[in-house]
Amino acid sequence: LVAAIGVSGAAFAGPIEDRQANMKAVGKAMGALAAIAKKEAPFDAAVVNTNATTLANNVKESKAHFPEGSETGDKETWAKSEIWQNKADFEAKADKSVEAAMQMAAVTEEANFGAALGTLGATCKACHQDYRRPKQ
Image (cartoon, rainbow, N blue to C red; front, top):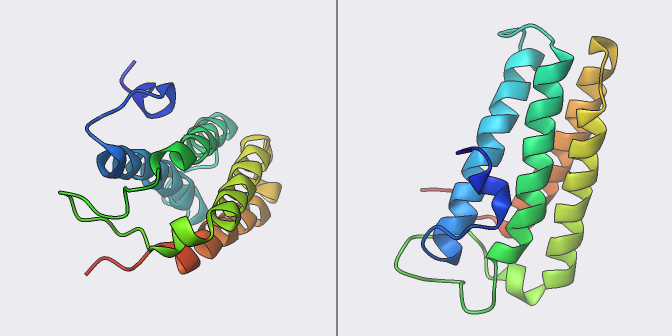
């Protein structure tokens, strides 16, 4: 039930907090996939599917957590103002990440894992490069 909060549309405290909680779930899911890539965990298609699906659902939902006026707030945000200036591109990049995550979710053989993770990672990087400032 707790895991469902990230994809249920439930609000936490505000758009900044919502998107940070959402992206924290994405990071946790990506961490599980990275552990497989680094051979710190064995390849397990069920683990890949679960984490890639979590990632896809949270990225898809995250688009709703960037409403106009949430560029700043009481909580620090790493979202760049370019998100609101280029909303269509931002959302298109998120959609590409969702697509790549769903392709990753379909991976059932270790031989296909690395390429799928590379594609997924590239979509994450493309969005972060343009729309997320580094944490200081």
